[in-house]
Length: 168
Image 1: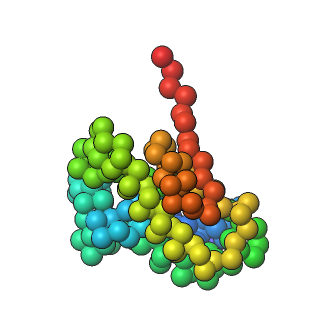
Image 2: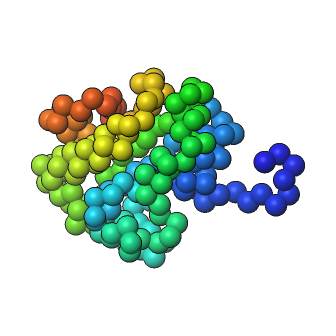
Protein backbone atom coordinates (compact mmCIF):
# COMPACT_ATOMS: atom_id res chain seq x y z
CA UNK A 1 0.00 0.00 0.00
CA UNK A 2 2.60 2.59 1.06
CA UNK A 3 5.12 3.18 -1.68
CA UNK A 4 3.23 1.09 -4.23
CA UNK A 5 3.12 3.21 -7.38
CA UNK A 6 0.82 0.71 -9.09
CA UNK A 7 -1.93 1.05 -6.50
CA UNK A 8 -5.27 2.24 -7.81
CA UNK A 9 -7.99 3.49 -5.50
CA UNK A 10 -10.80 0.91 -5.49
CA UNK A 11 -14.30 1.91 -6.53
CA UNK A 12 -16.39 3.14 -3.58
CA UNK A 13 -18.63 0.62 -1.81
CA UNK A 14 -17.01 -2.44 -3.37
CA UNK A 15 -15.46 -5.43 -1.64
CA UNK A 16 -11.95 -4.24 -2.61
CA UNK A 17 -12.57 -0.74 -1.23
CA UNK A 18 -14.08 -1.98 2.02
CA UNK A 19 -11.31 -4.53 2.62
CA UNK A 20 -8.72 -1.83 1.94
CA UNK A 21 -10.54 0.60 4.26
CA UNK A 22 -10.74 -1.98 7.01
CA UNK A 23 -6.97 -2.61 6.72
CA UNK A 24 -5.97 1.06 6.51
CA UNK A 25 -8.40 2.59 9.02
CA UNK A 26 -10.25 1.91 12.26
CA UNK A 27 -13.30 0.74 10.35
CA UNK A 28 -15.58 1.37 7.42
CA UNK A 29 -19.04 2.61 6.47
CA UNK A 30 -20.99 0.80 3.79
CA UNK A 31 -24.37 1.13 2.13
CA UNK A 32 -26.74 -1.75 1.52
CA UNK A 33 -29.71 -1.97 -0.82
CA UNK A 34 -32.08 -4.87 -1.46
CA UNK A 35 -32.08 -6.19 -5.02
CA UNK A 36 -35.19 -7.45 -6.81
CA UNK A 37 -34.22 -11.02 -5.83
CA UNK A 38 -33.88 -10.00 -2.14
CA UNK A 39 -30.08 -9.95 -2.00
CA UNK A 40 -28.31 -7.31 0.07
CA UNK A 41 -26.00 -5.47 -2.29
CA UNK A 42 -23.25 -2.91 -1.80
CA UNK A 43 -24.45 0.27 -3.52
CA UNK A 44 -24.77 3.87 -2.35
CA UNK A 45 -26.66 5.72 -5.07
CA UNK A 46 -30.37 5.40 -5.75
CA UNK A 47 -29.59 4.50 -9.38
CA UNK A 48 -26.85 2.64 -11.22
CA UNK A 49 -24.65 4.47 -13.72
CA UNK A 50 -27.02 3.33 -16.48
CA UNK A 51 -29.94 5.02 -14.69
CA UNK A 52 -31.68 1.92 -13.30
CA UNK A 53 -32.89 1.47 -9.74
CA UNK A 54 -30.91 -1.37 -8.10
CA UNK A 55 -34.03 -2.54 -6.24
CA UNK A 56 -35.69 -3.23 -9.62
CA UNK A 57 -32.88 -5.51 -10.80
CA UNK A 58 -31.72 -8.98 -9.83
CA UNK A 59 -28.13 -9.54 -8.79
CA UNK A 60 -27.48 -11.12 -12.17
CA UNK A 61 -28.85 -8.03 -13.99
CA UNK A 62 -26.91 -5.50 -11.93
CA UNK A 63 -23.62 -4.06 -13.23
CA UNK A 64 -20.48 -5.96 -12.24
CA UNK A 65 -19.42 -3.20 -9.84
CA UNK A 66 -22.52 -3.82 -7.68
CA UNK A 67 -21.49 -6.70 -5.44
CA UNK A 68 -23.44 -8.80 -2.95
CA UNK A 69 -22.83 -8.10 0.74
CA UNK A 70 -22.16 -11.77 1.39
CA UNK A 71 -19.07 -11.55 -0.86
CA UNK A 72 -17.64 -9.05 1.61
CA UNK A 73 -18.51 -11.31 4.53
CA UNK A 74 -16.53 -14.14 2.91
CA UNK A 75 -13.36 -12.04 2.96
CA UNK A 76 -11.18 -13.27 5.83
CA UNK A 77 -9.11 -10.05 6.03
CA UNK A 78 -12.26 -7.95 6.46
CA UNK A 79 -13.81 -10.30 9.01
CA UNK A 80 -10.61 -10.70 11.05
CA UNK A 81 -10.22 -6.94 11.52
CA UNK A 82 -13.91 -6.63 12.46
CA UNK A 83 -14.18 -9.58 14.83
CA UNK A 84 -10.70 -9.97 16.30
CA UNK A 85 -9.00 -6.59 16.10
CA UNK A 86 -11.72 -4.15 17.17
CA UNK A 87 -12.31 -2.41 13.86
CA UNK A 88 -15.88 -1.23 13.39
CA UNK A 89 -18.42 -1.52 10.59
CA UNK A 90 -21.17 1.06 10.09
CA UNK A 91 -23.96 -0.32 7.93
CA UNK A 92 -26.50 2.01 6.34
CA UNK A 93 -29.69 0.36 5.08
CA UNK A 94 -30.77 2.39 2.07
CA UNK A 95 -34.46 2.69 1.20
CA UNK A 96 -35.36 2.65 -2.49
CA UNK A 97 -35.99 5.95 -4.22
CA UNK A 98 -39.75 6.66 -4.07
CA UNK A 99 -39.93 6.82 -7.89
CA UNK A 100 -38.55 3.28 -8.20
CA UNK A 101 -41.96 1.72 -7.62
CA UNK A 102 -40.50 -0.27 -4.71
CA UNK A 103 -41.28 0.01 -1.00
CA UNK A 104 -44.48 1.97 -1.42
CA UNK A 105 -43.30 4.94 -3.41
CA UNK A 106 -43.84 8.32 -1.77
CA UNK A 107 -46.69 7.54 0.64
CA UNK A 108 -47.23 3.85 1.50
CA UNK A 109 -45.62 3.53 4.93
CA UNK A 110 -46.72 -0.12 5.32
CA UNK A 111 -44.77 -1.08 2.20
CA UNK A 112 -41.73 0.85 3.46
CA UNK A 113 -41.87 -1.07 6.73
CA UNK A 114 -42.17 -4.40 4.86
CA UNK A 115 -39.13 -3.47 2.77
CA UNK A 116 -37.13 -2.70 5.92
CA UNK A 117 -38.26 -6.01 7.43
CA UNK A 118 -36.91 -7.86 4.38
CA UNK A 119 -33.59 -6.02 4.68
CA UNK A 120 -33.31 -6.70 8.41
CA UNK A 121 -34.18 -10.39 8.02
CA UNK A 122 -31.53 -10.83 5.33
CA UNK A 123 -28.97 -8.87 7.36
CA UNK A 124 -29.64 -11.01 10.45
CA UNK A 125 -29.26 -14.17 8.38
CA UNK A 126 -25.90 -13.03 6.96
CA UNK A 127 -24.50 -11.66 10.24
CA UNK A 128 -25.66 -14.52 12.47
CA UNK A 129 -22.60 -16.76 11.95
CA UNK A 130 -20.17 -13.86 12.51
CA UNK A 131 -19.03 -13.55 16.12
CA UNK A 132 -18.60 -9.83 16.46
CA UNK A 133 -18.79 -7.39 19.32
CA UNK A 134 -22.04 -5.46 19.55
CA UNK A 135 -20.02 -2.27 19.97
CA UNK A 136 -18.16 -2.84 16.69
CA UNK A 137 -21.31 -2.78 14.56
CA UNK A 138 -23.60 0.18 13.92
CA UNK A 139 -26.70 -0.28 11.75
CA UNK A 140 -28.75 2.72 10.73
CA UNK A 141 -31.00 4.25 8.10
CA UNK A 142 -32.67 7.51 7.21
CA UNK A 143 -35.88 5.50 6.64
CA UNK A 144 -38.30 6.29 9.51
CA UNK A 145 -39.78 2.77 9.37
CA UNK A 146 -36.47 1.12 10.36
CA UNK A 147 -37.19 1.08 14.09
CA UNK A 148 -40.81 -0.11 13.85
CA UNK A 149 -39.72 -2.83 11.41
CA UNK A 150 -36.99 -4.06 13.77
CA UNK A 151 -39.44 -4.14 16.68
CA UNK A 152 -42.10 -5.92 14.65
CA UNK A 153 -39.79 -8.89 14.00
CA UNK A 154 -38.01 -8.72 17.40
CA UNK A 155 -34.61 -8.35 15.80
CA UNK A 156 -31.60 -8.97 18.03
CA UNK A 157 -29.59 -6.43 16.05
CA UNK A 158 -29.33 -2.86 17.34
CA UNK A 159 -30.54 -0.06 15.06
CA UNK A 160 -30.52 3.70 14.94
CA UNK A 161 -32.49 6.03 12.76
CA UNK A 162 -30.63 8.98 11.26
CA UNK A 163 -32.59 12.20 11.58
CA UNK A 164 -30.90 15.00 9.70
CA UNK A 165 -31.51 18.56 10.75
CA UNK A 166 -32.95 20.40 7.78
CA UNK A 167 -32.81 24.15 8.07
CA UNK A 168 -35.93 26.19 7.39
